Image 1: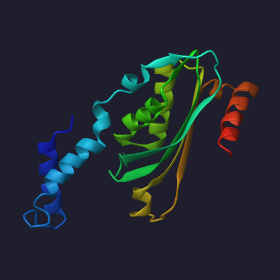
Image 2 (image 1 turned 135 degrees about the vertical axis):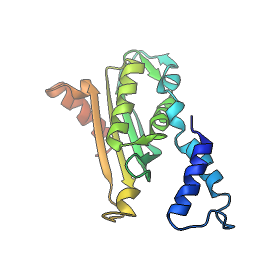
Image 3 (image 1 turned 180 degrees about the vertical axis):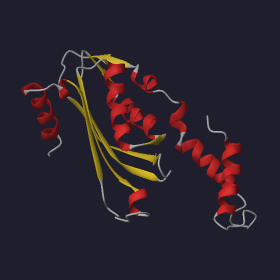
Length: 189
């Protein structure tokens, strides 16, 4: 749970720390706005992916399921600046599938925390394996990090891509490779 009083106080101190006057007309309501914003942006801290992935449906076929281009927004835990992009999830059911909206909600649960993209990708894949009991999961994420584009190295347009494979996707040899190949073929890559 976000402590809005602490966030408001921190923002007042931050404004003073950068040489601003928190009583200036344009800034008077800023601490409250930022506190409300962080309640939304860090809302995943209190959420659990199992809430979304617990509702499943029986299927007779265990073919590859892909949900692609799921937009997400998160905050880098190193600088608390946004990173944003798209996630693509693939999994091989084990007799049960999740509702498609539940996959997008799972991405949101983990994205709405202070994060590293690498960790975010793994958390989504692990949740699919743990909650769905699927045979395999693969998660591909591509994002632009504002900590790289607006500060530091300042390279706008640079994208970071992460890929995590679990279950049959991670098996050594031809079977794991075939599933991964099928995933990328279905994505047109």
